[in-house]
Image (cartoon, rainbow, N blue to C red):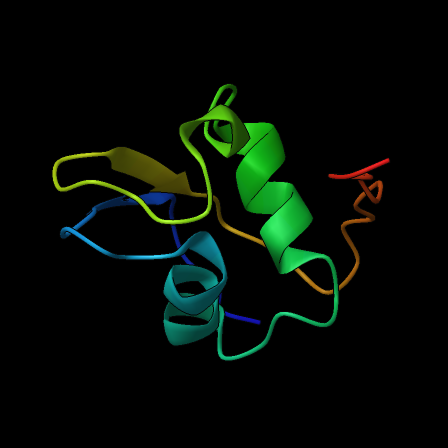
Length: 74
């Protein structure tokens, strides 16, 4: 994963979180989506497709930082 400081992304109309995370980290299979959702309370409540102007924190993730998996649906 990438090293460095936290960054922000501002969504464009039609963006989806999974694609934003993949574009930033290059992967979505190691807890990156869950980490972004944890860093952005309320983001998942906005739905699957985002409107323009949503500011999303993309936290600095390291390989040794465990991320608790979230269950998004029942």
